[in-house]
Length: 102
Image (cartoon, rainbow, N blue to C red; front, side, top):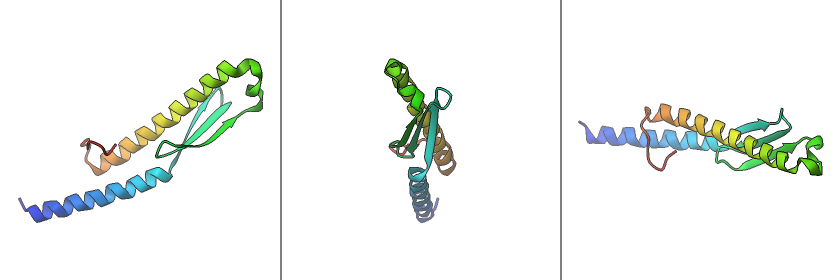
């Protein structure tokens, strides 16, 4: 096995992973709950970039329900982002899980 060739392949893979990481961080993922009453958008680094709540959910009596809807929408957005990350990184690593990468 040619060690120098293997090193070049590893460097190329690392470069590709960094490129995809950069793209993922800029990608937005949206989760919805309550018939789009609550919409949460996150970036690929799992930071929330936007929350939208319909006015009719802002009544005092809806506090518990609104909290639940926000939680559901955030969890949905995170799940979508995680699946997209796994798919895109899995293509680069041929399905091999790399500790600390994703």
